[in-house]
Each structure stands twice: as structure tokens, then as C-alpha cells.
Image (cartoon, rainbow, N blue to C red; front, side):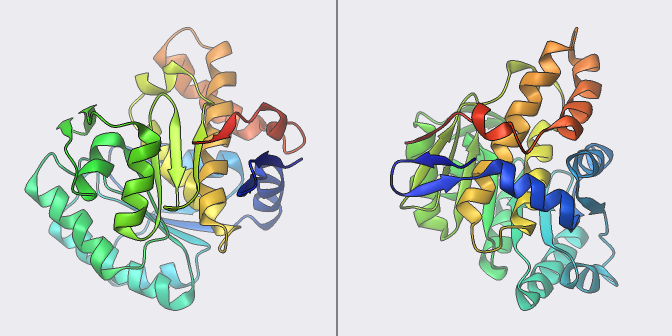
Length: 274
């Protein structure tokens, strides 16, 4: 089933999920120490293959044979940023889509400058972040505390649209209702559960899963970003049913990602044009 959104976009999460599990793409992730295990397990659970390689001696080789590259600056160092640039350039040369998660952009000068440098030196297909991170990169007002968004004063759909135009790529703003835009078409995804905000790393998992969907949708970055958030949102809804708190939810989320059905997920997608 395809979820039609107006006349401008069609989100086919079930079809993409089916192809993802058939193809089992390699998703190269240069990510942070806090979530490395979580994003690897989420990638496996949904049906792709993770590799967590950051050594500068191998990142270009790994990125060039991957289905997608995910760059996450959550626990960045200057050496890791250099590896991200090397990997990103190799991915660009090989036609591999790049997903950037600018964790904590706006919280410190190093984080903001590193995210901006990656965007300047690498062709990024999709940026996925919270409202404050995205607003910072788009040059708009934002308040961030550590890596958590506090306030932006903007509607998520308006922010995603403006940021996509400013950055020249698809932008996904995640929150209570997610928004994805390429600067022309903007989609809202209302799937999910408040429990997703109680576990460290679910935003990073969203970026990893975005990489999984991008790997099987090289020419559909807007839809890939939206479909990834539908998949995580539906899994979050299912996991919450079987959870008593953050600990059990964390475990149930992997099970729910694994149990997602390509045949039924589109009927549960809550996607609208912004």
C-alpha cells in the first residue's frame, strides 16, 4: 500500500521495508559512544547490516561500498570529524547517500562548526535532528541545553521547510510530531509515543534507520526520511504497549522494529502534507 499525501508525494514504508529486508544493505555509521550499540542493534532489528567504523585508515574504503553513510557528532573529536569528511567524500564519489545527525549543534562552538563543516565539504542527502539543532544550522533562533532541544519558537513544518531551503538537502525535524521537507514538499509524521523521549539515543536510532531507508531509496530522500520516521514511530507505539517504563521500553523497541510488517505498516502511517 502507498500512503498518498496530496498530489506531491507518496510514502511507501511497506515497500521500502520489504526491499530493505531483501537487500540487507550495509549502513556505515560513524557515531557516538553513547549509542553505538543501540544504533547497531536497531539497524539489525529492522533488517539492514551495521558497521561502526571510524578509523581514518579505513573509512573511505568502507563508505564507498556501503548502501548509506550516517554521520553522528554526538561525542565528536576533531579526529573523528576528519574521518567523517573522508568517509563523506568517498560516499559522494560512490553515489552513496549521506545522513547527518548534528547532535548538540548550537550547544558549543565545536559542535556547530563541525556540523557546518560537514555540510560545506560533504554532499549530505538528509539532515535529521531536533528543532534546536536544525534551527541552529539554518541560522535561526534556538535554545538547546546539552543535546536536548528546549525551544525554537517555530512550527516544526515551517522550520523543516526553511532549513531544507537554506541547507540544500532534505531536512527531518523530530519531536512530538515530526516534519520532513525538501524545501518544496513538507510532510508531517504523527506516529510515535512519548516513551521514545525517555530513552537515551532514540534520536540517533532515528538517524540510523533513516540511513537504512536511504540505502534502498537513493533517488527518494524525502520519502526515505519520512518512511524511516513512520517505521520508528509505529515501532515505538507497539513497544509502549508492552512496557512498564524506560528499561522495558528500550528492550521492546528492538523487538517491535524486528516485528514490523511490510504488509500492514502503511495502514498505520499518519502522514499529512504540512
